[in-house]
Image 1 (tube, rainbow, N blue to C red):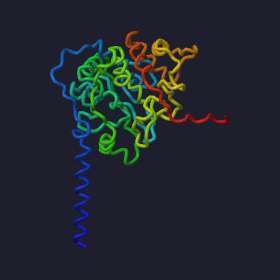
Image 2 (spheres, rainbow, N blue to C red):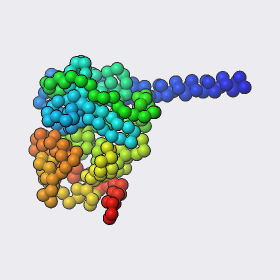
Image 3 (cartoon, rainbow, N blue to C red):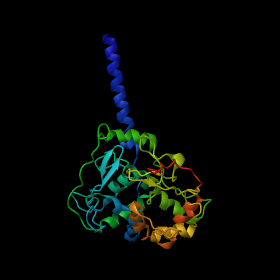
Image 4 (tube, one colour):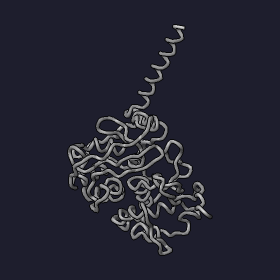
Length: 310
């Protein structure tokens, strides 16, 4: 019996040790190599701020200033409620004390300055495609904005999701730290669109269904599905008949500028906030995004639930 107990304890210790090693942020989400960076381009940072829709999540709710980045927006999920943090330049409550490395680690590796995992409700799974120089530009722009006092509420997550180390296991399964690499067989416009859609624009984060662990279901990427916050249905944006097959490149670019569809309807809900952001991009960038979206193969997403009474 004593030998059995010793074997059991040893097994538990080895298992715990293996878990701690495999979920270490340095193992599952290594930091990108930054190297020497040129002086930050604040205007490029402003463009990336718009493309990334940073204010849509991080602007303090209940006020009209979209550059008040005090955070606090509640984001519902099957795993609990997340609250977007303060990312203003406030040195205590925001990210004003962060260096470029801290910001790059957060955006590209999902790791906090204290070495903890961030939950993937923060879409670093897409932002990882942004090179360190672009992230340095984005941080430089954020530093030009007003510092906002006050911290967002803590996340409201039940056990075991309230244990951040568990996110390391999720990253081990689903996090791909590969940076964006242009496709030499494609045009410069297509590559620019691919970067904006998949990286700062993080379009797949909403326009894809998810598996039981909350990761994007790659087989139906961009094919729509339930709203991650449980507030409806997000449309298919592939070239499926139920998606953008009948839309022209110009019509997609127009929606990203004005919010109007080819049927003279207008987008609403969270997409209206997206359009407020993409409207700040250049015509060339919106056309590049449309060029990429028109190249996506037709993918059938999960069936949309029938409306009540139908």
